[in-house]
Amino acid sequence: MADDPRRVSAAGFWEGLYAGGQDGWELGGPAPALLDWLDRGGTFAGEERAGDEAPAAAPASAEPRSLPPRWTGPVAARVAVPGCGRGHDARLLARKGYRVWAFDFAEAATAEARRLAARESVGLTVEQRDVFALAEAYRGAFDAVWEYTCFCAIDPARRAEYVDVLRAVLRPGGTLLACFYPIRDGYDGPPFPVRVAEVERLLAAGFGIVEAGPPARSAERRQGLEHLVRAVRH
Image (cartoon, rainbow, N blue to C red; front, side, top):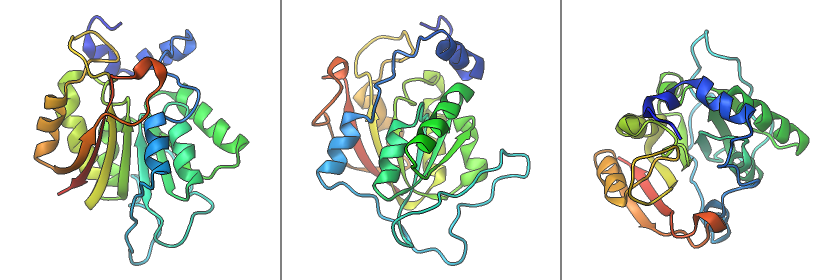
């Protein structure tokens, strides 16, 4: 537990958890909520863009990145996965034909995400970044965002800022698919508790919620504690 929620804004906090084997959030595979949504026919729509296939160029000081080596068709949606951890969800989305960019604060996470993607021959881009700075390099770059357990890992005082970042990196009409966890009262974390009313309030200004409710499937220890939202960026 973090006595001061601001501690989670330092990369060293997360590096320490990985190093100490305290990554209790690790599921060992993709989130059941995402798997079920895709299995039920959920899709992200891509958008034709003239010229360059890549998102907007990152500043010269940013870590170099490479494009995924293959994808399905010229309009396969570009999907961002902030707080990707070991990249299980990102690899699932890439296997489904999406062009995926996965981001995490911790070097331990991104290194493992790259290793697993290479081992499975899955094409995607993995970058170590502060998620709050993504809009500087990726404004309007993505057709969709998959959010899972990043919202509950950040300092709760920065949640509105984080939602603004998600809106900024999406194109108008882009999709935010988010599974919010843990839905409960309280203040201690991470994971910091989430309330449905708070989610609705934070999304109201920049998104239109299309559907929301408990996911059909959750990991056993997270059953009854998740809230799946699909929203469209205004």
